[in-house]
Structure formats: C-alpha cells, structure tokens
Length: 123
Image 1: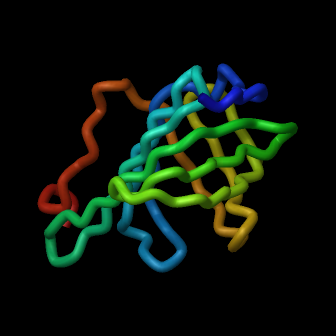
Image 2: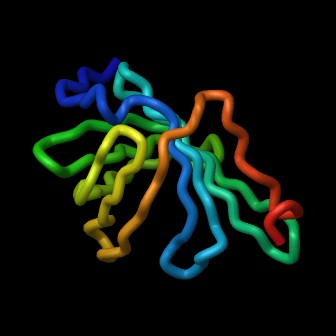
C-alpha cells in the first residue's frame, strides 16, 4: 500500500468538468478519496455515442501542484504522473493548469452520486 503524505482535504470529493485541448465537447468525472486514491471517467462524444476511458491511481498535493499517479487505464497497468498547478479553488469550483501542455481546466464539485451525461443528451 502506498503512503501518500500530502492529501489535501479540500480536494477530496467528486469533480466534473468539460473540455480537452483537442475536444471542447469532452468531459470527465473524478472521485478523489481521502486515502489518496482516485477514479476518473473520461467521456468523448462522437456522433452522439459515448466513448469512455477509466483511469485509477493515487493523488497528492505539494504546495499548489496536484500530481495524479495513473496506475491503470481501462484496467491495464500504467505508470504515469501528471502535474496540475492549482490556479484557483473555492471549495465548489477549481481552476488548474496541466503543466504538460499548459491547458487550463475548470471543474465543479458534484455530489458523489452524480452521473456523467450521455452524449445523446448533449449532442
């Protein structure tokens, strides 16, 4: 078991956002747990059909940088670390920049039972 020392309680919970650098209509839903684990669902919409990817792993916060340690993608083992600089956070909304590309993301806190919308409803 990993010992994550820098888990920030204000980031624990479920967060929903839209937009990716190459696809403004894509969306994601991440659940960040207090034990430092996370589960994120990415959805891309193509002609009204859902294409999902699931990533799992662990997260930590050091200063204003959150790192996601991706351990699986669609059940396959992966070893990747992604850094995000937190630009703004108020408990209900957060804005952060992926340091790998500079792309700025915005997400809002949602209830743990929140379900990602289907592509049919937004197409």
